[in-house]
Length: 111
Length: 112
Image (cartoon, rainbow over all chains, first blue to last red; front, side):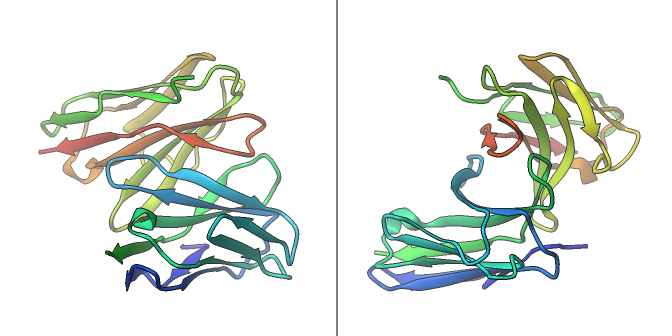
């Protein structure tokens, strides 16, 4: 059973374009994280959101946690080739416990 | 800090053989997680420890899999006997208070 669904599964865009990827669930999460994974490496934590409606920005990346804490989005402005990678969302039901990972969105930014 | 260290980085073995994967977490972290990643199933949590004690091993697929954490600086994941369907990338991650996870580079396991 996949608790977190991410869309789109694959995304290929030109450098300079904007994009949004989504993470959806039927469950309410106490917190949600976004990771980026590059080929041959482990996932790297980008951000953690805990409050419904929370918005966090990390340079050109904007993360939003849904009001009901069941969904989240990641928006990238003016994508660059260095943004290429697998983006994973992960949700936790209880603070300090395990996170369940989504299916991932594979992003390719073409120079 | 060197980050989470995993060894070996690559392992190729024949079906039926025992495989041992090793992990050294970041010093001071009290949580340790073992994950498996495949194209079909994505990133799956196998087991996690808190202060060296296994908390939840419900993700361990079969009795062929076992994990230990004898001290705060070392953990192993063992598969005995290995099968071709165990082929995957295995990640170890550590964290403080279980809130953030820092992943190692992974071990790519191929069972022929």
